[in-house]
Length: 183
Image (tube, rainbow, N blue to C red; front, side, top):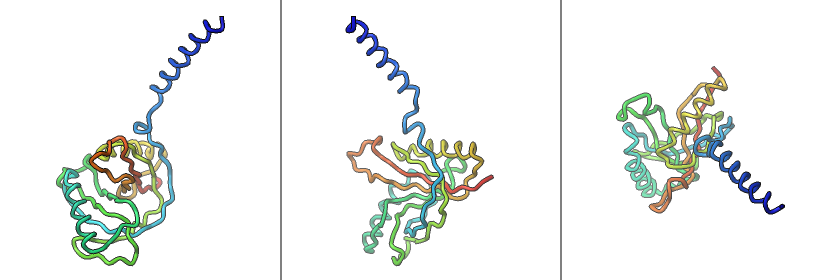
């Protein structure tokens, strides 16, 4: 009798677990969003105006230029985005690609250097293709709206995984920051 009850109970538990797992949002669907205090940091970058499809060329230019000038990153690559494909035409997008550097580093054209001084941000970790971060940003903005917050500066993405030709899109990870203020 115990075996007779054990099998249906086990099947019921497996079915319930599968239904529950399907009903719960995955990390890619529902990122953990939080308010975060961050430290300011210096970074060097290449500014760009144009479609995000040009990001690969800008990264190559950044890497070639920094290596040839012996400038070394002190942290992961970052992207700073001043507007969105939802707001402007691709050719009008304004963004920067760079990485954190030591404060004493001197840069010359085409590189520029500035300090990220925004210390209160809404933060979320995006897992998946970098081209899909817009979905996470949209969820962050919805979350901010519900909390009575508005965006107060450019979006910053920290690319925590440097992709190789063998990297699967689901293995990519970036941390997204959106500066905020209360409405």
